Amino acid sequence: MRYKSSTGSSLLPPRGYDPAINTRRKDGKISFETDRAAANEDRLRDRKLKAMERKLRKKLDKKIKKKLTALRRKLNADHVSETLASARYMRKLRRWVAGYLWKLTINSGFGRVRFVTVVPRHWEIGADDLHLVDPRQLLSAFRSALNRCGANHARGWMFFYIHGEYEPAANVFHIHVHGLAAGEMIGIFDVLRNKPRFKSRRQRSKSAEGKKAVSIQRVQVRRKRLTNLPDPITYVVQSFWPSRAQYMLNEKDPKRQTRKRRIPEPYHSQYLVWLNRWSFGDMVLTIGLRRTKSGFDISGRKTNIQKGSK
Image 1 (cartoon, rainbow, N blue to C red):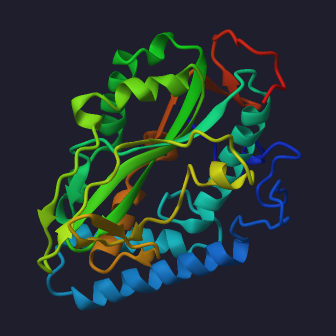
Image 2 (image 1 turned 30 degrees about the horizontal axis):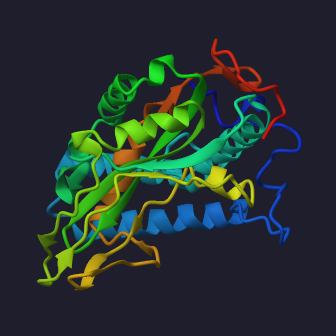
């Protein structure tokens, strides 16, 4: 799937479904980030990359230094540079994607649409090994797993995007996907959750502090209808990877840090450099959807409910 330049008119969201100016929340609040917030985030990322350059000046090899410099140049550009490491660029893409997914959620003709998170086993990556990860390979394996569960024959559609969280005690990135599933695609995840790589067994490992880290539920489907739109939809594609600790208060009380913190250095800079290597299309998986000039469209799948149904 290819996406045009962020400066192109094709990235304008559909009228009435622009998350930057529209909301269906009861409180009327628009939670989508502003241009100023995104610009401030890019400036902060640039400062942290610059600090890493200075700190590791004598230790950095020429290739890594060149990558840091190239990324800083993009973040400092007057125009919005096309890099997933830029909050300004991701704001434009998120606005476009969320707008069309929002419209599709209301009008796709498959009735139910549910929010889904999947954390496949073996997607826990040591922080120093993130540069070895190819998101296209991860998504290809995920697609194969979904098809073995019947996704290639199901009526409906799904959209997933790669996200990650850093777990400081274990020094790993938990890579996962957030997405939306509609129609018969929702039932695919009831099959998927029983497959070996997607079973939510409680596995614990000793952390650096001697506490026990608790495993994450690997397949999560929110059974309730989507509310407070577009918030659940904008959450699907995120531009910020947080750091969140996992720990055990006792044997029967697993906890996960609720507050999202910034990833500590040097891993914050490493993850930004990694993001800069990939395109938006490299991070996306769709089944039952195709990209058109007018956004996303159902790809040759018959609907089982009249359009406009919820």
